Length: 402
Image 1 (spheres, rainbow, N blue to C red):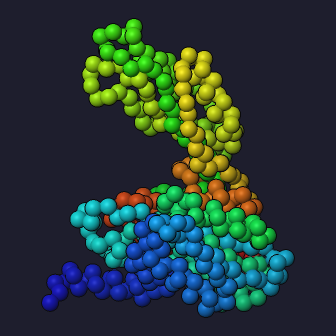
Image 2: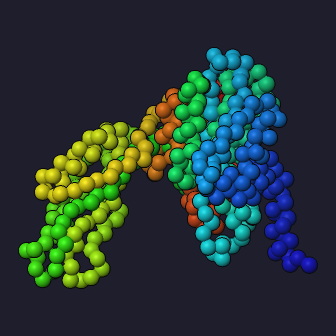
Image 3: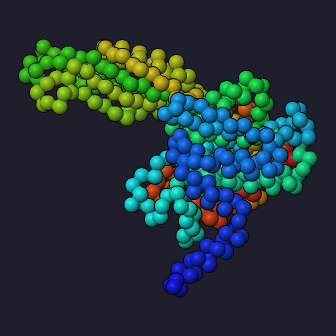
């Protein structure tokens, strides 16, 4: 027999589900799918069935090696204006990061659980609530605007939390080859900070990483004249790199930052001068800097300091910016109408699949629930934010393509 407090919790949970059935239940269904990168866990099939029921054409694209197969979904419903009408695309990912130690979760991470007004489960914040809100908002929009002029599209991948080599990037290349028009894209990343709607990402900084190897000469530490210590040689150059102003940023971006993430050298013995020093570093750069410029300036600093080196460079993504255009304006208006919150535009944070989509779409923004618990133990969203999130997406559709 249930204790009084357990009965009250169950009653509250049932009342919430009745009140928010469509979006909340779909969110719970998606959380229940065990979709750790690159697995989709059946999420896209569930989404595709819902979209097919309201007239969407859907395609599944499987990519990647057998050891890391990625599932991608493309879906579109053309509006009355056909190819001449504007296209608004919802984009996101069904894959989630690993749950981590299961014993540290209050409940099983793939068993959606409502407790104290919060919905818990891996992917609740990043980003299965947004996916559910996309779908239900689209269902409501299509039913109430049967002759909508513009088109609605979905691009969903299971390779965002992983290497991101076989997901959105290849789908964008595919769409570009097909000549698919894209005017607006909303990515469901969790962007809110303190309350739903307080932040939209209208761009992202670029990411340029390097693995630096500084060459020295190994020797006995008692005979330093016979060796060449790469740590000592590099110290002035490291200081110069840390103190360099790479750019001043602009109205949308913070100044470009340089950060060292790892330094390693030596054999483990305390009497050996190391023969090589390894340094891992990263630039998060604004539109005021280009990757080739950053590479050139860094290498010039090392050369001027007399450092003998090699660098392996990896460009993780270029910066993109949408500005306060029609899409950001429509989304801000929808947020204000639904939540009374004034929205801040931001380009902070890490990279996202927006770096790929921005190459083929005129305006790209990211918006979703609170980001506070993304990737954490007991990841969750506020239950009372689920329906307002859906309503914001529907109102955005109504403003742009109805």
